[in-house]
Image 1: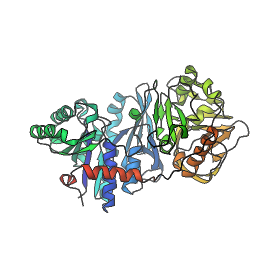
Image 2: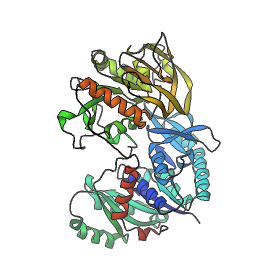
Image 3: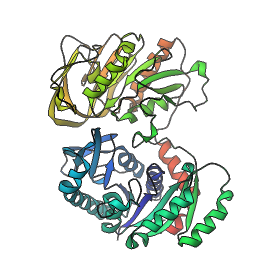
Image 4: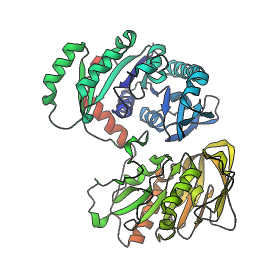
Length: 495
């Protein structure tokens, strides 16, 4: 019998993804055949993987990461239902990796939820046949009483997977004991009986300070507290935009590497209203000396050494927002390296045709930012593909060579309107220190990342620090965080 553990939460952003990844890594190191699973995810950070039929499909970034932590090849079975918000109260529904359409919540639940649930059950059953343990991740709060009859990632998963439940509560938000108690009280009886333990996450300080509260909550609920996890970030990709500043604020990521400010460079990233796949920037932020700074659209670029325009779920409306805020003029006056990723690539071109397909409003042709001699024409079908492309380094990746691997997720097709360099094959265009590409995961390629870093440092007229980041270190860090702070014996997992 396959053992299934559902890592659920009292709220969103309580550490479910990190704990699930840590458990996957820990079990894999023990030689256990383990797979991650999230029946329904809501995220604009996606990765391209194979569907059960072998075609390309997309899943949320957290399950992709957890599969890598588990040492298995991710497929759409690990995240069979994905909702990708695009604004105007609508989300794109992706079932078993394939985009079905754009729906508001009422339409989804009334007309598509049953199909989504069937796909989720099929995926779970395939994983269960092939693995000893499935580590399932819940979504948001498991105690949303208005959704208990259709809560696919929590209540439904617990039922059809016959799962034990580990309940997480984030103490950094305050009111942790009240949140835990209230959540348990609101659970349906059959779900409440599945809770084998709870854990407190993101605690700063001496855990002994919590002892009295833990004793009381255990006495009141009968649910054991299996551990207190300290505030610690293993560096796993963020699942959603909760980790980002709001569109009007700025935030810098990557400033805790010990590199002095006068030896660091800053990569500015415009905080697009519909930003997606911003995890493309995380490998840069992990580079010693590189600071990734999310800036509001009306912010200045005077302190930036480079700019990366990220992906977007709504290219046209974000282009209009950039122009309304004056960011187009700031970018036109910027003399450092510029990279546009996917939607950012489309924004940098001269025009976008058939723009109404992407926008929530009706548009025909919309002028782009004009920094690359290309145009994009939108089509109704989405292009999904994992690719390996030849690299012919030009500024801003002048030192790169060999090949780069990544994936495409986009609806538009971009073509040159005159001669232009293609440093990453047909998936790119570059001129005068500006690069645009459809290749998500570009900076996960060490050679490209280092070449970009070096060009940014050259523009800043300083030398980069030494660096030797281990891409597997985040998985091991998450596993250690779980192993050292949770009483895993109470979870009845294989040893």
